[in-house]
Image 1 (cartoon, rainbow, N blue to C red):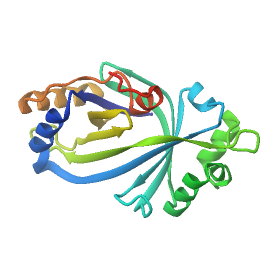
Image 2: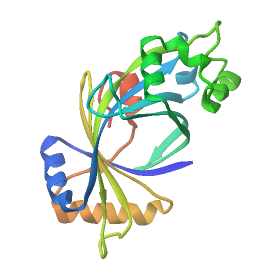
Image 3: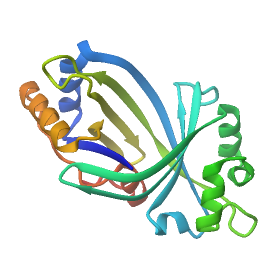
Image 4: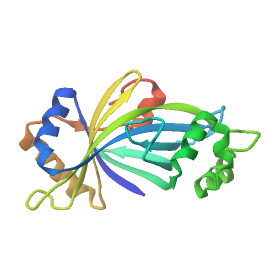
Length: 212
């Protein structure tokens, strides 16, 4: 179970202000391309499941790494997101091949692919994988220091959909109430407005519009 704090920022100005405030704590910046797969009848989406390939790096044809993930039964309440998640590394060249020929994903030797086949019947000849498309995300990763929530790792996202841009601060944690308090205090000190996220990025992508 992945547990995250998700706080939505209203616009690019708020994102820029928070990015500047957090700059001394920056660990790295990741360029991500997120692409989703399902069968033509969308059985995964109907079961509130998302099968995602994430490619890292600025060059679409030469990603530095790739990760296959299955997320299921997502729920979010008061800015705390809980979702069942399994993930595994995927060879970047194989990931690119599956983008070019989505049905090829069904033949990948992968526990996640086998799980999707066994539980949802997706990936074989009768329900081959198709690519749903996806979105791009630029993620700044920061670590808080002593006296401000030491050890917490924050992820500041700028997510580009075909229909708009979403800004969000996330933090994976085993202690969501404590972490949310730290993040809200930090945003208040930084003078950055926010609200609790009520939907995740995949929901926005499937809806074709920015959701609260």
